[in-house]
Length: 105
Image (tube, rainbow, N blue to C red; front, side):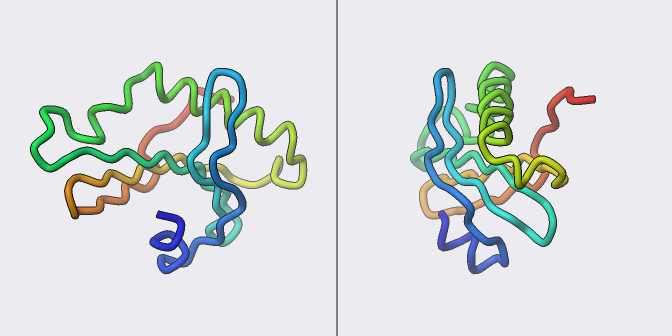
């Protein structure tokens, strides 16, 4: 998926950023926006779509891990932030920009 994002104009900053309680699949820059990307795969015959598998609890874990990323990478603290989801179902790829928003002030 990093190649897909690069071809879409995003610059990859990091992959598989793991901390206690969560993981960021891909961190990228699009212009001046820091993008945290969750990638979900499902077989085409799966009962649940990739998008449906990203629960509120999963979103919360992604946001907490994003906060840890920002704390460890202060050069990005003042960047606007966006949370994207890439859903892969069979061979279909759906990129949902700004898929969810945290309750940050």
